[in-house]
Length: 261
Ligand code: MF3
Ligand code: CO
Image 1 (tube, rainbow, N blue to C red):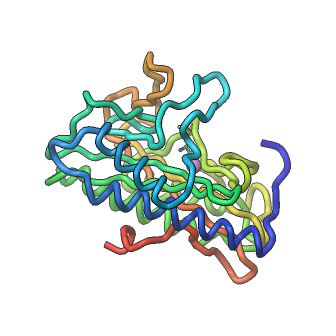
Image 2 (image 1 turned 180 degrees about the vertical axis):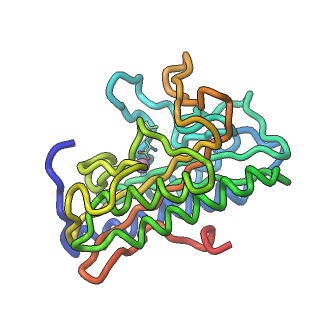
Image 3 (image 1 turned 120 degrees about the vertical axis):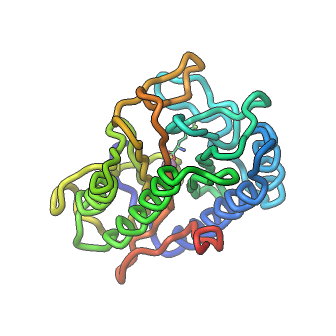
């Protein structure tokens, strides 16, 4: 993460395509979610969708610092798993679970990244509230993604919505710039102060992510080297859109009918 890479119109047009492909993959996975489905089944659907869209997975083989290459095309984070749950046959969804799906794909050299937390069957009212608050905080934050505003304006919206409902935001993971690389500068934390931080400019493209825990903000890494869970076992939700900052405001590149329900 060093220099901010401003995108021109041609690049943003390409990112519309990768954003739409990532959105399609996410929506297809959502349609398959239900009790009895394993996260390996969801990985299978993801691989088929990515191939059909002539895209490539941004996650498969991806290397975060101090991590092994990521072994799948999606992250499947059930209940107290915050992020980076690895799909496998042993994780079978049951009624009342929530599952965060994170997926990114590349088309024509540019990445699109998005995530959504789905209910499985009937969920408890607290889980319902968590999903509602976390999802709407993402839209409140995106509304701040316009020229002249600062990163702190985005981050504050995420933090404020979560904390006003008694939830907490993750401190150790952030959203990020995106483009030719899945992760570029700047970082977009889930907490911040209005009017502080880097000033936003047209041509920036940001993957804005919100990660909210019902209980404590603290998390731990499981021995598989990837899975991050809450330390107190409380539920956690995440939502993410890839957003282009245009001269007249934000454009969500990963929008789809999934988000309209
Ligand atoms: N999905 C995370 C993000 O949105 C990154 C996942 S890293 C991977 O930034 F290795 F799991 F792919
Ligand atoms: Co991301």
